[in-house]
Length: 72
Length: 563
Image 1: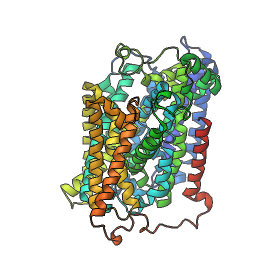
Image 2: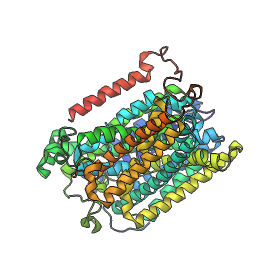
Image 3: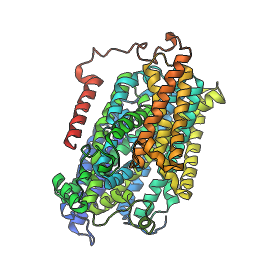
């Protein structure tokens, strides 16, 4: 898949998942501390916190494992 | 955009997530432009994709917006029967493509499926196939675009034109810049986002419903009908299941003709596998995709069933008076479930998944269209010899024109909503007979150029003819679909089966009446005269057949569990 010097698609995916993980986890922590007026069903499970954390972990793995200096 | 009636609205965090997605897909397009110089780069991604990349792209090109929201809606309407379109309606065909058909596509070095027909049969067969494929692709792309924009209007209150223009011009830009390479890279990204955005719904839904048993009980309490959660046991009669279909329609119409036709001859998906770096990767790609395809019901069918179990309101058909008055329809079940469980951030991710589904499907359409137009229509008909750079430029222009024509089609659909009824019919018109022509060409040395052309033409005309016959005289349904009780989907399955049979019979008869090609011209194109590379040197776990057998075993077990 890699032409000379081409960055792996998995690196881009990793970066985007890191950004999404931070945003979603952050929003989830905010909702945990300041519960919204109209909470979704099962809000007590705080899905934003653990799903955001999961995306962040996956994103960190991919962005480190497929970082450009390693795949070149 | 302006707000009209809406089911829910996005917060600034959600909009940030959607905006980030658009920035990244465009950034990938700009980044990959420098790697897209030759025709091989633009139309076949340099034939350098790994099995995983080609496989995920192969799957994502099929996950359009109609696929995600439409089949979730079908699960709400018909129950678990909709899973047949993901399992028996996909898995056997994908394995067949990887194990049996891929060597011929790959070894022949064709750029496209119509290109294979040129090599195997003749120029007329290629042109007929290319023109019908181009027509179907643009029409399907427009219909998908309108369906997505309509849902965004109902769910988020976004203006239809805003949704259509922003998302389709984004696809046009990144595909024009990086060709198939850019489309494939973005499809892999979109595939990951679809799973990341949609997987939370079944997880939380199952918790709320009390697991599978709890969900089944809730559906029964609501509908007082046990048939919604069984896949095969209700298919003995047209009248015994919510879809009005018989098992013969599922097995012979869907699993054999429609599914094998789509997954093995629709260039929209086959193009992704042709971009693989070697034959083994090309054979593994559909097998890898089949594993994920078998899991797609978790994020599409299960939310539809959970919607039946837990949503307080009753959803209505698209064409009903209640829908016209603003009631949420079947197609809104996935966004409604998303809104039920997801707060700020997660909601944006879910909406991004839906948009990603639409864009991956559309990128599939435009890359396939530009390749078929450039190599199978423009090159043989208008300019046989030109520098490679000329065809790359034509491919880039064709991408933009293809998107603009699709947008025009979307507006046409907006004016004539009944065009939506033709979506399934299109497959039986073009894909079913094409499968007959391709499979005979690959498996039967005696098939001749004339046989291939006349079989394809007769099968296509017969399918259109049967469709018109039932429209003019509805009682003809008892002959076309074998029962007056058959519903629209069942009619499509049987019409596809008949058109395939007609194509095969005409091809065989005409072939026996005409002179076959010499065997020397069939090498690399037909089973029996093509030396296939041996895989004996590979360890067992690296062989495609090993993984295909494992997928087949899991497939059989899954069907028995949900019998």
